[in-house]
Image 1 (cartoon, one colour):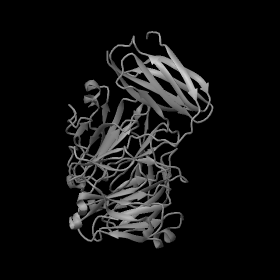
Image 2 (tube, one colour):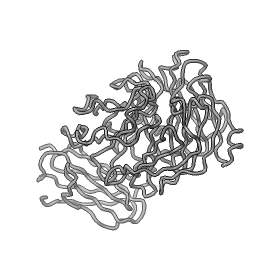
Image 3 (cartoon, one colour):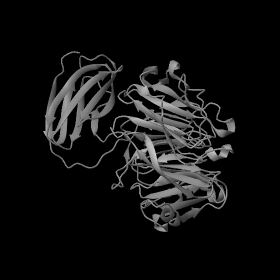
Image 4 (cartoon, one colour):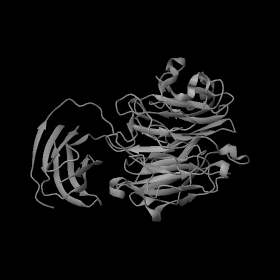
Length: 470
């Protein structure tokens, strides 16, 4: 590209923990939504999906919505149906009908995993489609040749994401029906490996298809998995090796009508919801590895008393949120919340009406979004890396101001990429001191269009999209 003029000013500032914001926007239920961009949940009333169960949404590194889906239709950031965004083969009544996974090493592409429901005899199985955000003038669209590609049939209503130990790739994990198989599909820069890693859980899912109903979720450090089985009244707790994709040390817990489960931020407490009979939230202390000790630790936190209770989901603010279709006390117009999820007993403080949804309503599902913490850290981090990168103004014309933070002496690389991901220029490739770094790039010779600033620090990469308008 043309010559780049830049200057760099470096200063040392106090550094707060900062995390990416891809999970800041949720759309779910009856056109309901919430944003965590301000730090606390704020109701959104512009959502287009109306679904009883599974859904997923994703934002960019700064919390700006990219797209969301119920596993059947995909809506862009302007809440318009993507041009090729209909007829995905998820289901309105599949627990985890949709899951969005970033394509490793390709900032503009995402996988949408769609999962069929037992009401449809799960005939469509688990499939994937590819969203390319460089299409449709940056609004994104599904690639026609990469839509509804089969991964697994038959399957349970389950699909979850676990980051690989290499901190770049992912594992897509699901259950195969009529067996005790847990399947882990590796997702790398080359795509999804259709040859899954197979493990045996010891809990055989045969007979009634309702045995397949319930959520599958990972712990936030990627070391454990929990699988709920409504009809069996059982919860399967397993160790997960995120370097190999294998499970081990399965423990079966008893919980009536187990539907959804979520780990506390410190990964030492497990919360399980009962779909019905009773519609309750129970808590397990999972700091032990003993099945009997964990089972004896069960405590009921709250009982909605009627209707049906749905998903539990950890949010960016560190609280665990809950859904219910119960109309008693207008519970279905709110999200419930566990305020202190690391705390054992009723002092975890559950509020069934924590967030009013602005006249919209909950059903059973919440977005299938995965957050990470370390086992000793109660602060939530999303699945992507923790690098602070600001580019302003945006859109811009003749210059771009860039600000980023380094935490240690590190080898840092800053590149400019075009909309296709091709490198235009390497602006910085140097070992830099800890601190906040500033630079200005002369973009007066750049053509109008979409570009990306790619920053790599200590082997971790983040991307910021910028628009240049002349």
